[in-house]
Structures are given as C-alpha cells and as structure tokens.
Length: 223
Image 1 (tube, rainbow, N blue to C red):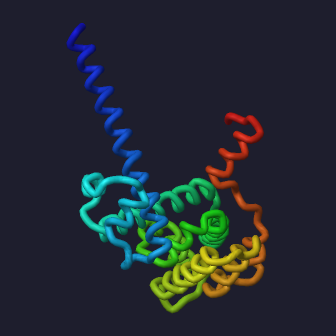
Image 2 (cartoon, rainbow, N blue to C red):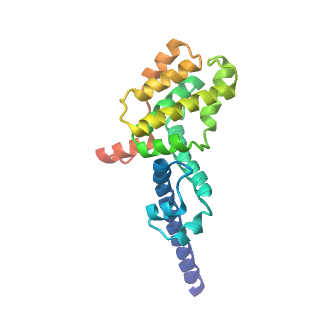
Image 3 (cartoon, rainbow, N blue to C red):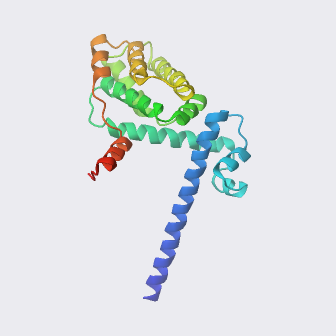
C-alpha cells in the first residue's frame, strides 16, 4: 500500500513537472513569435527573448541552445497550429481546387485576426508543415484543373504571394474581402477557370475550430 502511494506521488510530481515545462516552453515560443515579428530573423539576441518571456538565461538554455534553434522551433510551432486548425475545418471537402481555395480563405481569416503572427511568417518564412496545400496544388496540376510549367513554380508563386499578403496584413488594416481577393488571384495564377473560381470564392466558409469554440461558449453550447 505504501509503495503504491509513493508511486502515485512520484507520478503526480512527474506529471506536474512536465506540465510546468510545457507551459514554460510555450511562453518562450509566444515571446519569440513577437520578437521575431518585430525584429526579423537575424537581429534578435538571446537577451531579447529572455526579456520578452521574463525568464532567466539559464531557463532559456534549458530549452534552446541558440537563436537559430528557437527560430526553427517557433516556425514549426506557429505553422503547425495554423495548418492543423485549417485542416480540421476543411476535412471532408473534396477536390483540390475547392480544398486549396477554402484553405487559403481560412488562412487569411486567421491572418487578419493575428497581425503579429502575420509579421512573423511574412518576415521569417521558415515554414514547415505545408505538405497538404502543396499536395492539393500537385493534385490539381495532375487533373488539369490547375496549369503551370511545374509544381515547384506553382508552389513558389502561391507561397510567395501569400508572404507578401501577410506582410501587408501585419502592417496595415486590410478590408474583410482581402483574403477572398488574394485567394481569387492565387487561383487565377494557377490557371483555374473563372466559373470554378467564382464558386470557390462565394462558397460558405466552414468555421475554424477555435472560432466554433468561442461561439459555442458565448451561446452556452457544449457540443
């Protein structure tokens, strides 16, 4: 009996320690997002992140060995959150053009609600985790829905346009329709026919999971 109690106590301490460690890491990443967004990828020093996160240098080195490692981790963390949220929202949508179009429109909805994240992605653009939208581009090219000299050129064109759009969103107020306008231009650049584009930009957007949670909480729904 005493052994089981001792084991439970150890397990509890381990769980609490892991949760505290995860919270600290998230705090550092959130601070890093703001610092990189304001200063770019090359200017910040470790002391900038220490001040922003209100931690000691020793705590910083418990999680990251360098600014470069923190930059890579912040990029992966930010992109994963965005892409996973959008993928959940568009689950069940069929067809590469509609999936890509809905994904882009939702991406810009999120972007307009998060100018700091926009500045980070726009200035840094060390992005991982975009395999699924890239796959939709390639699938659309194979089906002849999209037209481009190569999949590589198509991806670079789309992601380059997105980067410029994010820089604009992060630095000035853009109209609500800006995301749909950018989506329309991206689809035009891929050679999508006008009728399909019109359907995509007028299609009702699915709710993002975080948006649905906020609205359910506001109306008292619990699922």
